[in-house]
Amino acid sequence: MDGVALDSVLPGAEYLVLSSRLVPDLDGGYTIATLSRARQLAAAGVADGAGPLLLTFDPADAASHAAQRATFARRGAIADPARMRNLFDEAVGAAGGAAAWLRDTASADLTMRAPDREYRVLRDAEDRPFVALPVIPGDPDWHLTEEPVLIYDETARVIGGVAGFRGLYNAWLHEVTAAFGHTPIVVICESRQLGELIADWDDPRVRIIHTIHTMHLEPPYTPDAAMNALWTRWFALADRFDAVAWPTRTQRDDVARRFGERIRNVVIPNAAPVPGARSVEREPGLVVVLGRLAPGKRVDHSIRAFLAADVTGSRMEIWGGGAEHDALQMLIDELGAGSRVMLAGHTDAPGRVLDRASVVVTSTAFEGQGLSILEALLHDVPVVAYDVRYGPGDLLGAGGGILVPDGDEAALAEAVRAVLTDRELYDRLVAEAPVAASAWSAERATEAFAATVREVLAAPPRR
Image (tube, rainbow, N blue to C red):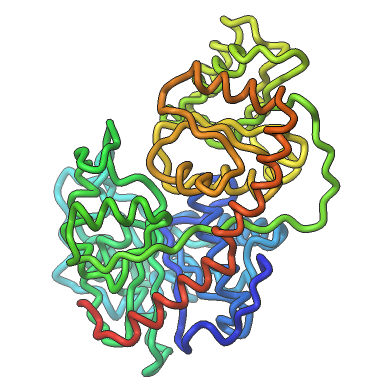
């Protein structure tokens, strides 16, 4: 439960967390942060400790969703598996076809599909169709399609449709919230795509707090840099959310300076789980990289800097999976570093890795907050990081690590060498780590969230 016991902090309301998907070991820090927030709300007394409703929208089959919930429950990532629900699990009718709430929403006027439009027909466990989704290949804006989602009855006949994914998603949300009476509803929207689709939700009971998990800028990631189409469109409607929660003060301030005060911007950090009882077996000289092997993470910088540091007896473990695996292995082979640098693969126990590490290195080009840095601090591991937007500077501002200029591999190497060879420096950074981490604790995050909830419930809805 992340150690939070704030039963009286949160105002009385129904709490819903909306996520496009929640799949074990997928989407990196996003999944960790979303589930951590839900656990914090459970610990603060939401639904008598069962936690908020976790609503997901990915169209996998019911068996897959059940397996995902079981995995999260086994790992202690969710307080109550029954509170994790999926749109497509609940869109199935008991006797075949779509559920009654979805049939009632369907319009017979929305049955015409474009002649060349491909549809993905979803079927229940007995192979009976219940909905058909328009397929929009290669389009990052697929969620905005106006092509109808088709609805089937128990005879496998299309009886109507709803207006795209927006119509489908909103129909389910209205069904879920119909049982809440006049109780205020606090919606925590964890996905920008979902945010675009619910930005006009005009139920007077509803307040939407839209959380942010990542960088909003394109290279070179300066405060006035260009944004991609999704972010540009999102900012155009961001004032419709009752609050937008940024994970760091630096990003919040950059956004406020650029877009003014029309958006209600707040800071709610993403907290990482506090380690429980552990047996720390620190391995001298072990340098760890922890995270996705994606181009933006620039793990190749960490590899070259580690080798340039050239500390006798040191070695590097790179934990994580992703598209850059083969290219990184090729780099390791080309540098003849196979005996000192290892791609260790995925781990579902990062805490055990961090309890062995002497230093964590991150050379990412950008961040949302940097959960791996926070996790390292919580495990008393010094961090060496590029000073990039957003997160490393905020997290390490109170100590616990060394920041070096973005892209300066020589400075990164020198910092790694210093941490591994200067005992006085190492001990100081280890002592600073828990102090730095305390500013990002679950208690602080829950207090910030509760203050935001009180503020938005005291004001009229923005839609």
